[in-house]
Amino acid sequence: MTILFYIAAAVAVLATLLVVTRRNLVHALLYLVVSLFAVAVVFYTLGAPFVAALEVIVYAGAIMMLFVFAVMLLNLQAASPPRVPWTAWVGPAVLVGVLLAEVIYALTIETQPLAGAEVGATAVSEALYGPYVLAVELASMLLLAALVAATHVAARAREDQTAASVERGRAVLHGQGTASEPGVIVEEGDA
Amino acid sequence: MAWYWQLLIVLGVLIAALTIAAGLIWYERRLLSLVQDRYGPNRVGPAGLLQVLADTVKIIFKEDWVPPFADRRVFVVAPSLVLITALLSFMVVPVAEGWVVIDLDIGLLFILAMSSLAVYSVVLAGWSSRSKYSLVGGLRAAAQMVSYEVFMGLSLIGVVALAGSFDLGDIVEAQEGLWYVVPQFVGFVVFLVAGLAETRRIPFDLTEAESELVAGYHTEYSGMKFGLFLVGEYVAITLFSALIATLFFGGWLGPWLPGVVWFLIKTFIFITLFILIRGTFPRPRYDQLMALGWKAMLPLSLLNLLITGAIVVARAG
Image (cartoon, rainbow over all chains, first blue to last red; front, side, top):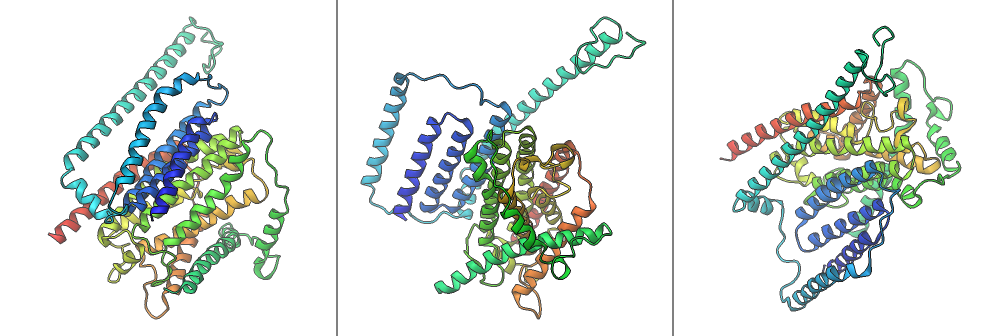
């Protein structure tokens, strides 16, 4: 299990490195999916199969899918990103180096075996709906608020669009607008 | 369990799944023909059975062409994903008592995970083709499959709550007295519709919609790469039929006959249902598809979950 853990962890680190170095956005996202798989395996080797499954279903399956969806829609392929000067890497690299040292230290001094008691679906549910029920409810309220806000923004944008096209149609009908605008049909007699 | 027994089950499940999927091509064409009052392929071999072989040979020897404008690496990998995820899901489906490749505690979650990864195949195929029809097909697939996955997961929670386990073997054994289709009828209906949408079958095949998108996400594919999409679809149909049989119709349970025979009979009944649905329903508009999902399926499955939960709690307390 320990070997599996280290292999998965190495894959996760490598895949994430590839994510930030790819120039093609979709390729970068695919490496991010690989990285999430590796994290799922890490969870599994640590004795949390339920969390591992959720990692794949929610993150790799749904959230990254939406990322890919957005990138496909935006079609960012044409614009190549500007070169980043090497000095910009220094700050993040130092921070990550500190974290890495910390992780190595924590792993080397550990005396207990990596895979402790297995945390199954029941244990996770009991923790979520027992001591942490308030946090779960707060998180769901936050998500609900985000959902309502998104719906509101989308609905207003559509209303504006509809109002504008109605306005344009009226103007053309009354002979004030130009008939050459796309999407507006003018009847011969009215204009 | 001895290693050779394990190996036998692995090979058995793999070969059976692929053979059934290939046979389905013939079965579907003949059955659809009957629905449409014609004969279908009946020339090659007895009752046209060897038509599949002829088609396979033809498709393998076709030129394997990658469009020069495509994103080559992703384009090549995408078709295999659909088959891999469907075949991996078969690992946790118990064919008969103890006949399962891997007895996973989180079996049902594993299947949901694989099914949510299958979306990548279609979406990446659409994106990497760099063609407008493929891209629109891929976009539709992303929205459709991500949406219907939500109800698919929710419709199964009722079954999990009644059985008290994610393990498919435990779920089958919990149906000893009563098949879950009776207490979970709403869940069954939602799962069937979600299964149609996940396998992108008519009436939910807006991802390929030949009347408007040429062939949707696999417009640019030819030869065996196209063949993989085809076989992947049939494996997915077999998988969903097997799942319906396992989760709602007692899997291998049944009198007189051995378990595996019951399992196969039940699976074939649902495969036939899938094909008859294809022969019967028209394709809805895209907004109708989304409205059906979010305005009918989601409230239905939530209500089902609420009532099932209340009954389970009332019984336990």
